[in-house]
Image (cartoon, rainbow, N blue to C red; front, side):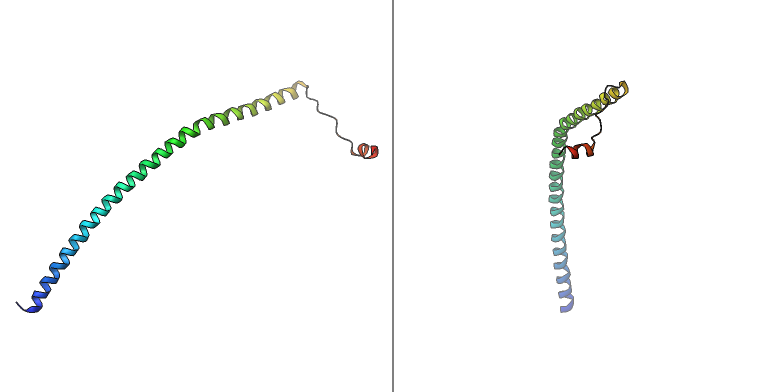
Length: 100
């Protein structure tokens, strides 16, 4: 064998070993990334559940307030229909200015 062939075999062997080492490290990094993403996903799921539990009473409270608003509108409409809410007389601006 010539010295150039020996150097080529040694360099190819070293490059193969380095490529295998990089591949193994890449696999380990991807596994760690997968477990980290799983923990982040679990944390986000927990946060979502907590927010839903917190927002449920708030939604109920807003529904009650909206119910009161709607019932007030209904009472006002029924009062108008029955003629009990006749409204006040319009303000006469000229009369108020002459009093001063």
